[in-house]
Length: 111
Image (cartoon, rainbow, N blue to C red; front, side, top):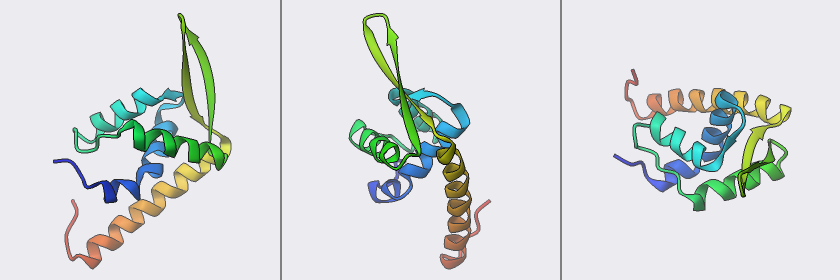
């Protein structure tokens, strides 16, 4: 079951930062594939959601890009800056705390 775009919108930066923190230098398609794989198909990132988010993270100084020539094509890789690594850690911790708070508010037990 896919999750609503509204839920994804509020967590997309955190998801991308965590993917980059765990996997290092990664290109766009690879990010979408990893998210799909890790979520067992529940989260399907579109290019229209992924790339604007990556550009925002880059503008904030959390992500930088590296272009690599692959045959006749140029592949753009994304990787965390030192600030991005710290921010990824902080955002994941904040989100885990948020999940705990929401489970309390909604009175559900999360395994």
